[in-house]
Structure formats: C-alpha cells, structure tokens
Length: 115
Image (cartoon, rainbow, N blue to C red; front, side):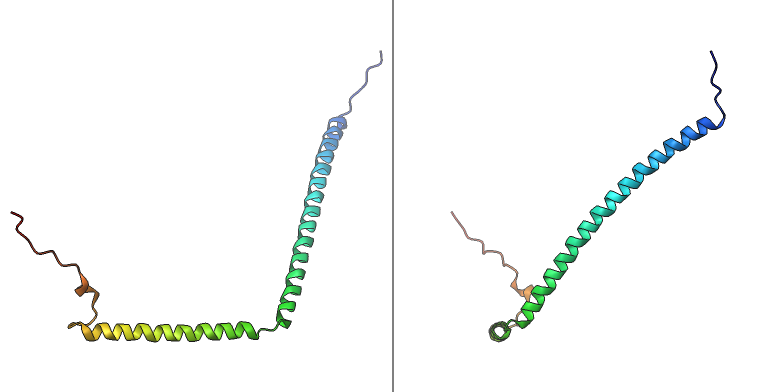
C-alpha cells in the first residue's frame, strides 16, 4: 500500500483555509450590518425631509392668530402681576411690621381651666 506523504505545508494550507472561511463569515456579517445601517440612515433622512416639509408648510401658515393669543396672554399676566402687587401692598399697610414671613409663625393657644 503506498503511503501518502504529508508535506509540511498541508497543515499550513488547512489553517489558511479555516482562517479564510472565518474571514468570509466576518465579512458577510459586516456587510449585513452596513446594509442595516444604510436602511436606518435612509429612514432617518426621510424623517428629516418630512420634518423640513412640515416646517416649510408651517412657515406659510398664517401666524397672526398665534401672535394675537400670545399678546393676550402677556396682557393677562400683566394684570395678574399688578393684582398681586396691590395685594402685597395692602398686606404691608395693614400689618404693623410689614409682611414678614418670620412674623407669621403660629402662636400657642391660651391656657384654659376645664374644671
């Protein structure tokens, strides 16, 4: 029976084949990841394009009613602020030491005889 001689390069070739197969697997995984990332980037770009269209449409929208509402809110805030200032002045005028939170501590109840 003729014996087959194993050359010293055969284990090296087997090792190279294993590494080449592993490298191809990693390359495929990388390619799949890049494809997923590309799809996600496309979706994100579509989202930005849609947002830009909505912003452009909002800019052409008549903004006067919104500005009017904001102006009315500012006026209401001014009226409320004036009212609060008047209440504060009233309290300061009616209390001998002015409005001081330290003077507003609860006082103990007087002692009473129950018997």
